[in-house]
Length: 268
Image: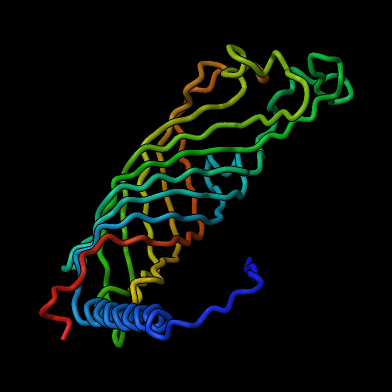
């Protein structure tokens, strides 16, 4: 907010007023020069580029996993390195959530004759059931540049090997339910763990100005898993057989690079 001071006349200092304008003009020139340097370096040569990314997407379950869960969301983070040769490697972690529960029989032993679950206060429980999963992989792949684009954008093919687990998640928004607290919860959550093999194919983009970097594609994983609970309390059955769990979905991510600036001698 500006405040007027009565009875005082201020004479403008032309030189003082022009200094901020000159500084802004010089700053703009430096920014343009830096942007053009990054543009030439990204387009003209394949870069060594450590980076991390944030991603999200949607997918569907299949095989034994599809008998338990349907479609759901996914978010995650990755820490990778792209080499000038196009070789790509690093670590990635995915978190699956909101997968629709399809398996029959979950919590059947806790329901009253009307098919309702009663909480500790004697009220009908407001309970949401869904699937959650976690996938952590060590990745290796390659970037294949496309014609008429820079050497750092193109088709990315990536493979990963790691650990996966999934379980039934119970979301109770009202009163507590003793049967779904520990140590009883483990008899209902269907916790499963195993070894997963992941594939990704999609488009990888590094912009000339270094500001718009993203990827989008299809990710699949297959896993051999084993139930981690000796018995399901609701069905009174032992669950110890190995499983084949499959998942496929669309994944989109935003990339944050740490590559070095082009050397000064290449700026001119």
